Length: 136
Image (cartoon, rainbow, N blue to C red; front, side, top):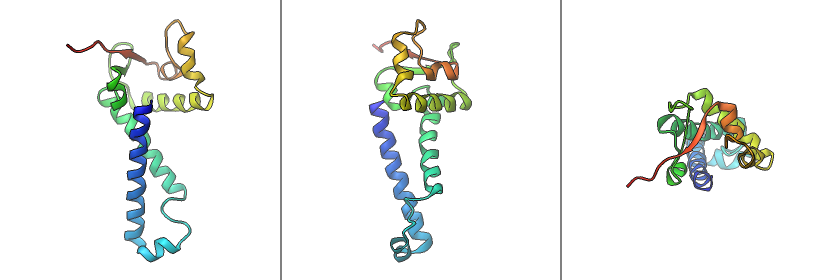
């Protein structure tokens, strides 16, 4: 999670820079600086950042079943039959992850006591996180 968190932070920073650049391009530098409602505020900006974060996880989980951080630890998210996740499953995983964090990680701590070793994200999206074998 730390590895992916750093990647998401970089994406949010790049997305913010892009939003500010677009704001300056559309309204000019003087207007963008003097206007208290700059590109780093408002609902549209927050939706833009949410879109970037959701896209990051959805694209990686749909493409290989792994984010870059998961690749480092040989983890993969997939359906129990080995197929890739749907967009709906990716969104459910993200929602469950958010709820888990809001509950101080409880959705991840249940892995220690769950016989199936699944988190809330696994249960909600009807998927599993597996440890891949080492490559020789």
